[in-house]
Image (cartoon, rainbow over all chains, first blue to last red; front, side):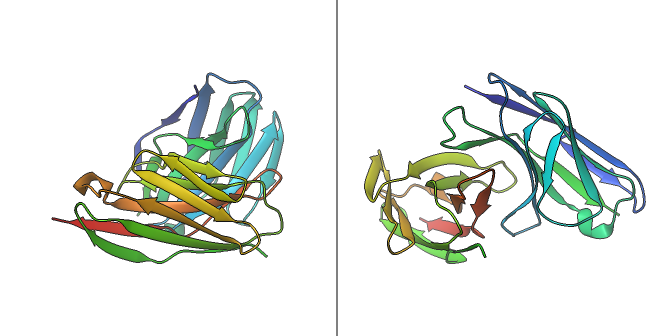
Length: 112
Length: 109
């Protein structure tokens, strides 16, 4: 089965600072990968998904970007954080049969 | 457009049965998923339906009607640890999953 790692677990950053969140996947190859954000008490919002190295699709226009430099590595970045970027960021990997998504432990980001 | 609706909150008593409904309108359909999410944690997979009917997994069952765009999650013999948010999600036949807003279930003693 798959294992998804995310770091850091928590992060407090000032407005205007850069961001880099990393996600790595074990136990599968060539997975579809996803970045979600969950604001406090809200549902999951799909930010980006990737079907392969260097292939990124954006679902929501924002000041965030994503990159996939390796098959099992997915990075979420920002050059300048906004207050509204605060939330719980989840990386997910699609199961080998395409029948579910497995989530990493998440990163809780607070922008002050 | 994509739209998934779930009740925002539900309350039930320990030992009881609760049904959480989900209705969806998506441009494609390749399966419907239910996830459980405890506060502050990542979602975990509960069930998957791609054909009409009921799927049973221990205390949890999930039902799907594709013609009605409707699903429900049934939780039996509720336990305190079942207090969590339950997320309905549709595989939109392509590269992404569309998630509902989640239903926060509180189980009372």
